[in-house]
Length: 174
Image 1 (spheres, one colour):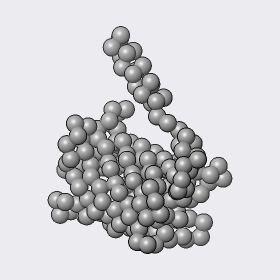
Image 2: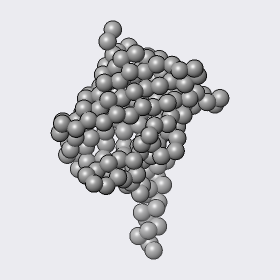
Image 3: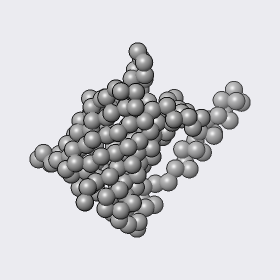
Image 4: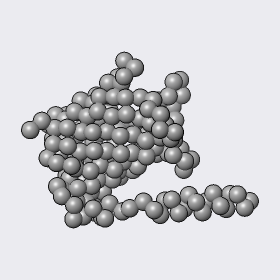
């Protein structure tokens, strides 16, 4: 029982240690994800296990456009093992300023908040690994570096424990 109490306390303290996206309110250049991802964007990234071992690298070709009040973002992933995958996001602005996203492999709704040069989005993803599909939680943080570049770091967790991290570099043509 004591071990569970200590573990619960550590997890609670770790969760509290995360900065709020509002912390970046004064940072420039401002990031509006629906504006940044308009048109074509390319990205390069990797997935690392919690040990730091890189287990998958990928290239993404993306295209975004407005459709009524929604923003549609199509992603085509090309993995270093020769496989590929696609995801189509539909993002809807909310009255509170947040952005809600849906995709075929997202459980429920992804909820994103922007402030300054930062955008944070949290969601549960159905992640295929071999013959299995796992539901994992993503905590995505995007930061706009300049008008062409956005960097994304995501923590991937299962049952509250980090199983890995995703790092992605987005680049737009001028």
